[in-house]
Image 1 (tube, one colour):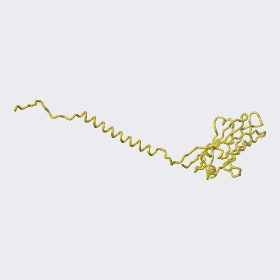
Image 2 (cartoon, rainbow, N blue to C red):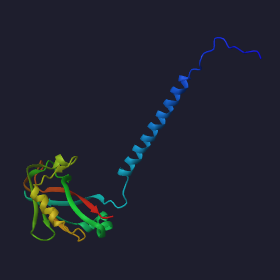
Image 3 (cartoon, rainbow, N blue to C red):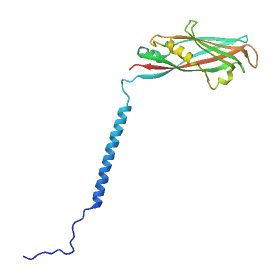
Length: 206
């Protein structure tokens, strides 16, 4: 039987190009797998828990309007939590109400009104003072376009938060605003229409 002899034959070599492509494909699949695991884990930790507490910011403002024939301008106004929808809508689920900040705004005033401003906040109709804020260089025109921040001491903040304890019970405040030694460009009577805004945080149970 004749023998078939293959000349110039050599052992078969592996196709390294195909192996390289296969390895790259496997690496990409592994990378995609671990990336997916990372994303799912992050979503699990950061997704909204239906049992988490909710926080709302409640802006309470009270307006003052007066015309004073003398150099001492006095204004008073009262405000209660129950005047605001966010409080009423969540009052049965309220856990905490916490003071955040306060500011004064001028809505209108007599021309160039200046003087010594004094603002006091009381518990409802009582004489229990929560805080007193003063500004000896008050200029009403400055606060027509920007608010004046009412800086309180830590004790003042503690007084307010202590009064707001048991938030499911409606709380009222009485604000008194005075401008002493008032002066303007036209002389008396002096007119002032201002607003004080208090920001609070409502912590609501799920």
